[in-house]
Image 1 (tube, helix red, strand yellow):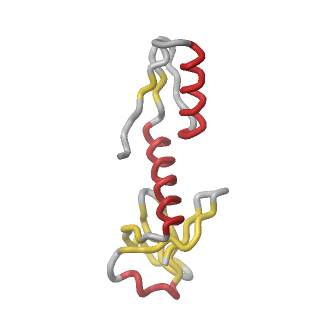
Image 2: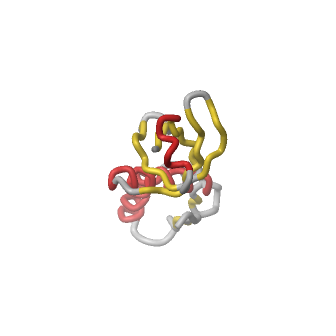
Length: 116
């Protein structure tokens, strides 16, 4: 699921290429361009955005996601889920035993996720 994508912008009509590149850019984000080479999406950024989109989808559907406790902090625990560090409040400590968490809230402006 998380993989590199290459965009071939050499072949095809220019209008079709422009529309496809615009759609791809709006969906995924930034790309890295090397002179004489096809466009290459930065793999790390792609994986982050893809994981963020998956977590948003899981949050909207109110499903559980696998995670693991990283460390105890003031007021709760840090939980690793899909490459992101999330927060588990101490009042929701029941979910620690099985390693499956439900996403309580996601802050879109900055990657801030609270689970229980």
